[in-house]
Image (spheres, rainbow, N blue to C red):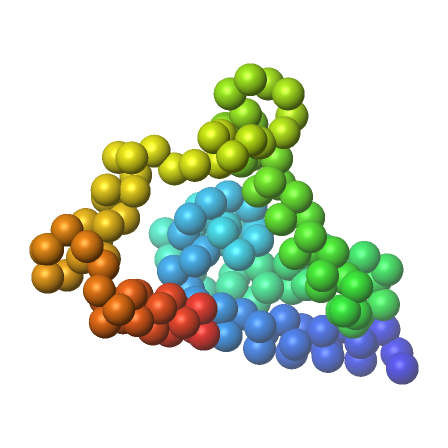
Length: 150
C-alpha cells in the first residue's frame, strides 16, 4: 500500500472521527486535541473555522495518536492516548487533594466537601424536598447515559 493511499485513508478516518466528535468540545482548551481552542483551530486567523481547518486538526490528532506512523491506529495506540489522559487527570487530582503532601489520597482527602455535596443534591433534587428519590436518581442516570452516548 502506497504512502499516498495510507494518507488518504487516514484522512478519511480522521474526517469521520471529526464528524462524530461534538463540535463544542473543541472550545474548552488549547492545542489540536479534542479540547482545542477556537484560536488554535482557526489557523488562518480569519475568525471562522473552515472544513479544511477542522480536517487539518483531525489529521493532526490522528497523526499524534499514530505512534508508529503506519497510518493506522491500533488498540494499543488508542488506549495509550486514553491512559495518558487518565494519568494526567490522576496527577492533577492528587496535586489538588493531597492535603498532607504524601503523594497518596486518604479517604478524608477524597471526600467532597459538604458544600459540594449540597450543590449536587440541589441540582438533582428536582422536587426540592432535600432528598433524592429513586425517580430523580434514575433521571440523573438517564441524563448521564444520554450525554455519554453523544
